[in-house]
Length: 265
Image 1: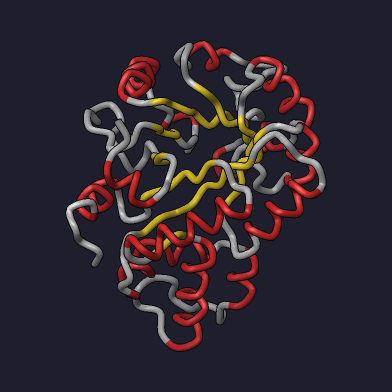
Image 2 (image 1 turned 180 degrees about the horizontal axis):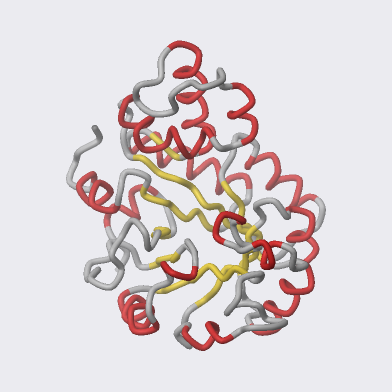
């Protein structure tokens, strides 16, 4: 059964990062749907850990199609490590986690080959929006201030493969807590980086214009606030045509669990 918290927020599930959560010892997943992010080959959970997660929840694993081990047109040995009943989200792969050789690999043919293996896969759009759209698969987009408008435009253009959104989530209305959890993340988004004063802190110590820019960005690029505010944002995404809203617990999984008991600070 879906957790009460998931039902209250409207989120479809949770995205977990192996560098932040010890997935090998995790035995309590407060969501029926879990997405495991790719954070480099050395952080990839073991096949046994993935099998265990698949037993605990409906599992989806991000697959970087340019990375050694996941290249459907080359070294694909790590595909065999994925549980048979796990879904995948095909992504180009964050360049920070790829070698120079991997970054040079062509993306479009690898997405096509990946979809031949996993026809129901989602396709991550970050940095490859037009290529991802050409696949016709479920678009897995990062939340932003124009997500609703872009979703409506995509659907008006005839896309019928579905839309999913990766939504960093912080169940708090406290400004310092938001900046501590989300400041570094939102500061890397291009419009935010361009608006920030040079050299300004991007955490809770930010002041003046930097603080204003970052707090505004937290509310544009993440789902934040108390339960009512989070639920309202998720409902707005659904009204625009988004099918799946996957929450990344920006304050940590424990904080997300704790908030289900009434904490919002």
